[in-house]
Image 1: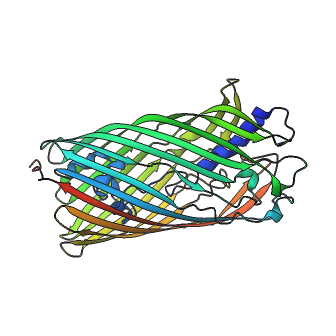
Image 2 (image 1 turned 180 degrees about the vertical axis):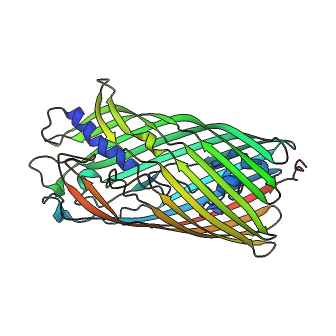
Length: 434
């Protein structure tokens, strides 16, 4: 990035890297967040689409609301502690290499999620779920070798999903409903300015927000007592993100431009199987497909000029998750569970940036539920994510390139997640269809 003849265009180029900052690891591949159910987390989300996560499994498959009689609410609170460091290696621009590594870019985040279902009669249910399907944040040291590609990133989302479920017969239930989603981002990166040392580079910023509408749908099949097969679908949501870019000029004044960008979130297909293998033992399997490849290259358009001024080459692949888990009723009041999952990330060396040091990961989880009373159940889960050690390369000839400033590095990351929840049953249960 040389010269400052076209400040708006230059601001947009800076924003291209900044938008990537918002898409920082969300522990479900790229910037997705899977932590919507404490119970499901305890089994590494195995069988979530078949109801292993209780009413909160509505996130994966809304048809699970017909599995709970009466009026039931579940509220979950999850703490995500991401630890990730990026260490520059040979190949980094010599003016930036002495600035050193990123430090711990992880930022702890609290993720609330909840779901409520209400049985109207022996065939009809209504429900509402709320949660954050995308998000999280990272913040490396203010001055580091990769500062031209990222200084901070924060993304926020909130989705509300009312659904209607219908029990067709003893073995088939279906459900569907709209999803309303709010999406915000706030991102920063260093701006290289001739004549100023890299340790004093000011920051450019990108801020934007949007809301959009999609839908969810699903079905559960119970071919025999003790066996549940579930399949759920979350549609893509189109976001017209409107916001502003600010970038310092050579004289350290700041120019800002109003921009817009179109972003389509990935659709998700979830399949789950829950099988009773003994009166007090259940085994669950899960599979998820996330269509991250639909993001492609995202254009950034000047609202003033009405023309594209930059692009963001996300170019993600599709994401795949495979999981297995089991739970054991230790006593009438206590249930313990555990699970293992492997996720093929949509991010690899071809599209990895310092803003998104994602990679394939293994999720090892344990959890427990305690039935305090006939109406109240308390749950706890813990997960540890093992992420592969990955390489990053930015600069000339790469998708991420700011002023041909080369950056090469390796990532070292892991995550610990703790989740708590309660389930409460109101009133008397309405008998299910027999």
